[in-house]
Length: 351
Image 1: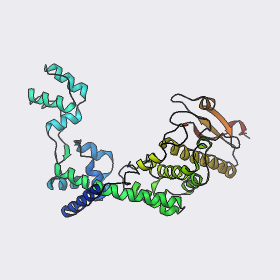
Image 2: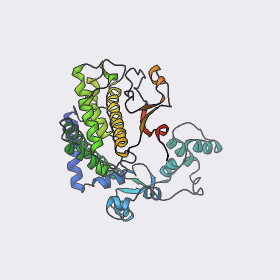
Image 3: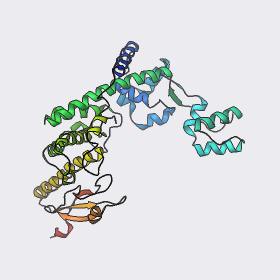
Image 4: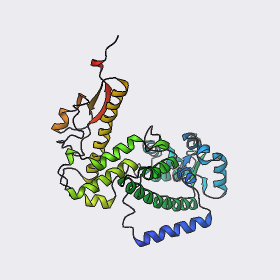
């Protein structure tokens, strides 16, 4: 994901370069966003058959993917990868070192260096090794066009992030969620496993943002009041866009009065709001279904502070769930106790 703070404090020359990119690209017939993500797959040599098997690119592009590839090759955007590129892409470093050793060649260096030595010593070495021949790679011209489009996408995304976070802070929720939906649905592989991005922005998302704006976790009780709006802003940005903090927010939260770094502070704010929703949702289900629910705490990985050790595994009634993140957690990266709902088996009776 892109860094939400990179758009702040851009140098004038950087902005000028972005404009030049746009002008030059429009002259050549700018690729659209879907073409950009498809062609970006070939910035490094890739097997055509493997790329096409990754997803339904025909549906994503809105036209036959194989015919599109032929068009890109004719336009000089893509080209067949040479032997050096194919071998580098398909052979592991240990395998190349074994080959080098068998040919009495040095085994030091990166994969491209190893491949170059092997081909110089034995130009036909890989000819009979079932080397795949359907590899394509972007040409220099193709890489330039991708770079130009990437700059445009970054600029558009920076503007979208700023707009959506500001709208969320003002509780204009539809205006906050629409840029996120549009961005995720433009991606060939949207983030967030199982997230229905076409419906993102429902009651769950509204609850979490309202909680970020209205409540405050005990773990952050030492934060100076002047920093609270910045923490809320960072937590909303993380929630909507899945990003780390930008440089400007990180600088403002560098001295925050807690044991956490700036990203950790905002992450705990978001974690707190998400867990508030989990408890709320479990209570709602319990009422609607007439079933007894409990909340489970769990954490398996890593080292624990003494507070997290006490709550590493536990079952709690909905009225007695400890605040997560734990107020007295001192884990370096912040509290990672997970909270999940479950039916209270002990209270379920069979008839």
